[in-house]
Length: 111
Image (cartoon, rainbow, N blue to C red; front, side, top):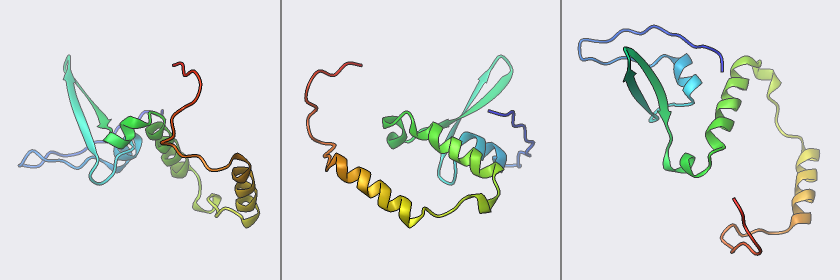
C-alpha cells in the first residue's frame, strides 16, 4: 500500500475531517468507523470492520483493492459486462447447480 499523508485542521470543538485520500486508503466511507491508537508519541488510525466484514476476511481487502484500482484507472476503463460473458457465466453456473449455503457440509472438514 502506498504511503498516504494528509494534513487537516482541528476545529475549536476538537473535530476534524478525515481527508478523502485517507478514507479511501482505509476503505471507509460515510458512517464508517475508525479507531485512533496513540503509542510512543505516534498516532495510528485503522478502520473498524462491521459485523458483515468480520464474517468474510477477504471482503475488506478485496474492496480496498477495487477502490485503489478505480482511483488510478480512467473512468472509461470500467465497462459494463457483455451479454456474451453473462451467457457464459450463466452456463458455467448451470453446470454447478443450485447451492444452498445453509445445507450441512458432507465429508470431513479441516481448517
